Image (cartoon, rainbow, N blue to C red; front, side, top):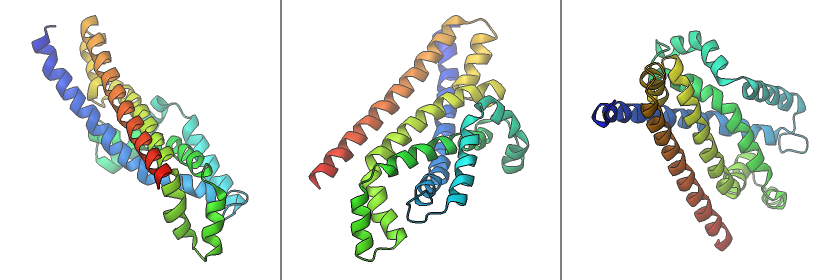
Length: 222
């Protein structure tokens, strides 16, 4: 396959991949951030200590993290069809991508929140700060660099998931690699696809690392 033939396929595959990953990331943050915070708040010694709730939420997160994505992808076909109307295409893949990444991101959020100095929380509590205030004014701002690093890691995981989703009709670079590279024995196309994926991951990592360093410097000078 010539470069002129590969270029439109790679461009469309890249657009589809970025589209899936972007919206799956948004849904993952919306779903995973509250879960991670809840895991911290309801744990032993937390502001909303509730061991039964913590155990249930923790179990759900652990089960979600333990399922291989390809199995989850297939198991969610009925639910994806119910939500989107189809289980094929980049829009449909947002559903399993987000559901697969939410438990992973929730654990990263939990780890980031636990790193916050408990003395700051106690200080705000002593001044009469409510739990929503503590979360909004202390926990999230103090954990922001770690949360950005968590988002970066999650985006990279989602890029890998999106490539896997291409094997079952998800479009994107994974689909192009399978259809035009593997099935047609086009090694060149496969290698170019891998290079594009590596480039996307590298850019995401560099941007994420730069954001973390910037936020860390601002935190030290604040």
